[in-house]
Image (tube, rainbow, N blue to C red):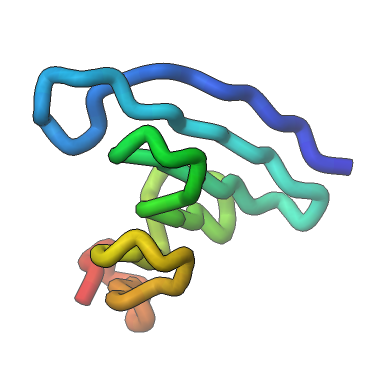
Length: 82
């Protein structure tokens, strides 16, 4: 069962609050779903696979169509997204 909480905070630095849903998943991961433009769709999807506080993967929808345009991931375990 997932534990979900929703917060309002400025993620993209534009001075306006963005909606952030934080899901703690049954597999031990934490997912962050961010709506930066207020349209109700996720624009940034970040995953902390082991819930250690370090994001392991980020998917970004730049054009608002609901499909990720970019993916950054720490595939080597060095703490850097590329």
